[in-house]
Structure formats: structure tokens, C-alpha cells
Image (cartoon, rainbow, N blue to C red; front, side, top):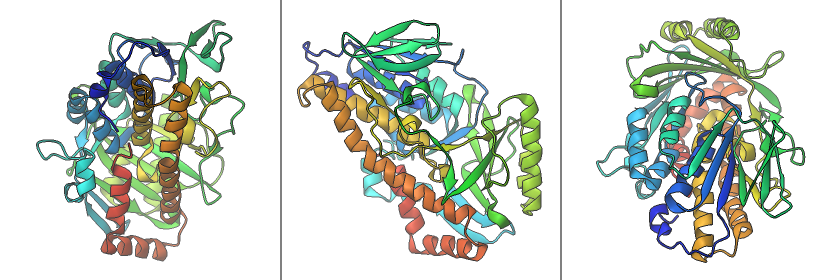
Length: 434
């Protein structure tokens, strides 16, 4: 992937691309805007998001590695800002609820010891590893602050769909009855967003080998974990799995997070964000952890969570076309390929989508690609295989974690750790593909 800033020097005045509309102010949409601002400064960008704010103090945290490396490559100052906002992650420990060790992975050493990871930017100039945990709203705020003056962020703007414009390009149809035309529209508004439209296959409830998965999240604003640079996985009976970690937040605040995953029994609701649902979800998490005989400190973490929600997770098959009926629209991130969360790659791959698309648009300006349609085709070709493979790996890992008999599960983790397979799988996901 060429450097965006260097590619900007190749800009020619004959390009037809002057306006880009982005639906969704999540990591994919904001990263695409930042990339275009840096590489194609004469392109006016407008971001539409239905929320009336950038959702502060809402949602959970994400793991950032390949995405962090790509953001630093895009703009060193942005990379530094992400590093400052995030919590460094150095180690992953996996154990049974009874405390038996299954996996102990030194992430920092694995990254520093891998030539390709270093080459792709996972280690900075000071030798620090670009592997972090960060609250979603903190990442969103960091990206928003990096936007250039060429970008207009329209919050509280509900989008109903994307359609072909009579004069060429594509239109963003808004709920207020108006429409805005752009030379290109990027749909980055997730699995249930308007950008997917009725012509694409519907998102499916997240399932592993045909069985639905329930995911409950809890966030504590009073962090108490001793090993803040470690992620701890706990495996209990009946497919109950818990991930505990510390995450960097807005304005330097720290948070602890507890995620409980299990095979679904009964109805799984949509995302629940209100305070009442938060209390119900927290009580359910605590009950699950106690029933699985999880360690007391894990149960205490769940009890301390002051923001909890159940994620109505969904899966999007990455193989159908990402380009819309109009050649001037395309999908990025979860809208194109929402995957199971077991590898922690959803946000990382969304950021790489944005970087790849921006790079292809720069190639049009440089004369290396014929037009915007060729850029979209090249973007889709470059990204589909990578996200499809990671999605498949996530399904396999999720099946072992939540469906496999305990003896097989435990043997699987011990064996893959001893053979170095677990390290290889981590490095494969964490190393940028663009």
C-alpha cells in the first residue's frame, strides 16, 4: 500500500472525483474521511450519522492492532493519538474457570519477533508494539478530531437509502425527504444500516455452526484490575466464556470490561442500551458467571459494571457484491462483512477497508486505475479474501470456545499454544493486509 501523503503529490487536476458522501460515523467512515482528507485534499467529504452525537459514554471497547498500524501509517500524529488514548496490551492468558492454564501468549514478544509484523508497522520507531484496547467512543473521538476542514460531519441525519443519481454518481436519501448527490457514496453504517438496502441479502443472527450466540457486555468506570496490560479469557462449563480486560477511554479515563459469551438459550434481543436493561443484563451476567463457578474477581468485575448491554450480534456474508446497483456506491466494515467477534478483528478490518478504498481512489488520480468503478472493483478484490478467511477462522474459534466439549476445548488450546499455532493465528489477524 502506498503512503497516502506521498500519493497526494501525484494528484492531477483531471479527476472527476470531487465529492464523497459517507453514511455512518463509525471507525470505517471516519477513517475513510481522514484518509481522503490527507491524500485528496480537494475532495469534499460529508459524513451522515443518525445519532445526534458521537455517542460518548456508550458501548464497549475494542481491540486494536492491525488497525492501529494502518492509522499510524496514514498519519503519524493520528497514530500517536491512538496510542495515547489506548491501553497497551502485552499478554493474553486463557484458563478454565477452575484456574487450569490453557494458553499464555506474550503478544508483545510475538509481534516484535515477527519480521512481517514489524515491516507492516506493528512496531513503532521506539520499539513499542501497536496493540491496544480502547473504548469505542474514545476511538471515535480520536478519529473525529483528526478530520480536516474538507469534511462536514452531519449528526442527527437519518439516512433512508442510497440510490443512483440521474446526473451520475449516487444520492444519499435522507429521512427528512431531501437528497444529496455525490460522485461516490460509501456505506459504513453497519449490518442494519440503510446503506445495505433491500437488494442485498439480509444480515443473519450471529450463529456458530448453526447455533445462535448470546453476548453480554459490562463496562466498569471504576477500574480495579491489577494486570491492566493483559487480557484474561476464562472458560467454564456449557460453553460459557468470559473475557476480562482494561481499556483506554475519552480524556484519559480508564475502564474495565467484562464480556460473557455463551450459546443462546431462549430469545436473544436486539441491542439494549437503556439503564433499566443495563441492570437486568448485569444481573444476568453475574448469575451466568456464578453458575459457571468463575473466579471471585471475575464475578466482582461483573458486579461493578455500571453500563451493561446485550449485543444482538449479526453476521454478514462477505461474498456478495459490495458495490451497489449504482457503480458509485460501495460498502465498508460491518455493512460488507460483519464477522464473529472471537478474533477481535471487526474494527481492525473496517479501518483497513477504509485505507484500501482511499488508496484505490488515489490510484485513479495518479492514472494507475481507469476510473472510480475500477477503484471500487480493485478495493473489493483486495479485501474480500482477507475478511472471508478471518471470518472463517473466527467461526472455527467460536465453535471451539462455545460449543465443543470441555475436554476437547481444553486440549485444543493447550495443543495450539504448545505448537505455536495460537501465536500464528494472532499474528495473522493482527498484521495489516493493506
